[in-house]
Image 1: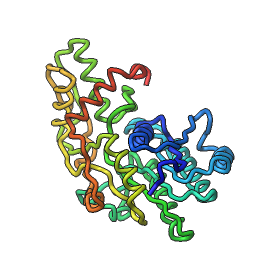
Image 2: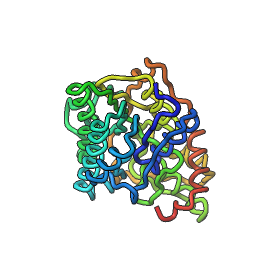
Image 3: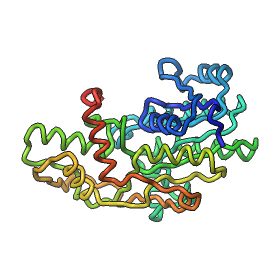
Image 4: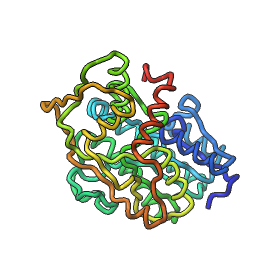
Length: 314
């Protein structure tokens, strides 16, 4: 168990996941949380990371820093996604180990699982068949971070764990018109359609793919729970175990935002993977379950969007 005054470093504290972990730690009474902005510490620079860890020597590390983006961003910058993610995770994990970090938790992504993985996806399906090509670079980097933690445990007896979240949403999400994920993109589109009085909104595909969504504060709660209650080689899936169609999601977002126009589907556009659901029986067996239902979470996310001064620029 992490002591309440233990020195805890949250890497990526300005991102959606990192900021949620900081909020959760503070809510649970942890008092010695250290953070660095990108301008203070570039995690891709090995010399800077080594100097930071040698000076601060955090006892616990949540590695939530990553270069992230939607399908368009992933496809157009494959090399950047691979380099930045590989460098920052290797630097942080290696320096944590070198400087006696008691426990590290690595945040991955469900895109690490094979494209045609059996559904719902279990933790042990990792590396059983090929990856989805559109985010292969990101997935390979995340698999490498997860495996490096596993290999350190095997070779040096460390207690480094990893968690793989499903699709996330919530406060501090990215609402960029082209570089955001499906749920924040829908929030923005329906909000703008409502403001502009548009009679219809067109969405890609036919709305049939099934997706799972986890509110980011629930993920943060699981991250702290695992840090205190889990040790093991295998990663732990983070999700709700529930899914809905993109069409149902779209209608739900329109309802929360208050958009009453028509929703049209452009079936000449791709659907993406037909189904992506995580098997969450492992976290359930450890005694954890999610708390925020999707409609409540979307309402909270929309409130955050309305109060987010950066939303127009991001």
